[in-house]
Length: 166
Image 1 (cartoon, rainbow, N blue to C red):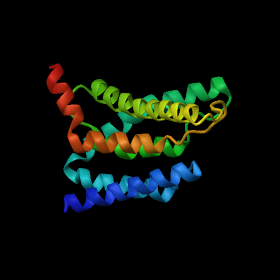
Image 2 (tube, rainbow, N blue to C red):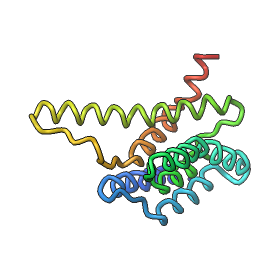
Image 3 (cartoon, helix red, strand yellow):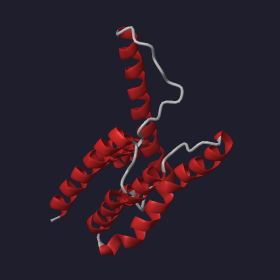
Image 4 (tube, rainbow, N blue to C red):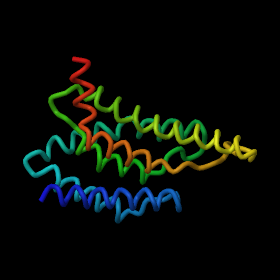
């Protein structure tokens, strides 16, 4: 049963990625569906740790969203991205391990994937002799959140990294 729920979660994540790339918007019904599905995957016996993970994983991006948006007078992240992190953070939380390190690995992977995409875009544009327009371009952030989640969740990446460190 868990495997079916996880496959359904991955289908929804790929749907979110597709919609966010094309429309720069994540529908609330998809975010809510992912939240409910994540709670079912986590299980009722681990609901406390789910909400701790959802809160902790969301906090850095909320601070970033609040302060940077005020400084730049422009929305930096869409709130749909934050709601997506709420849903996925609950599944990534490993209670017995340092939460700061877990969050660090997740956001390091998210921003590394986004940076890699930008570098590839610039190199390809340069090779095709096309002008690179970077200023004012909106970047869909949900695909990197979803890819980072899939990589971490499938390969137990956080546990493996922490095993090597400790």
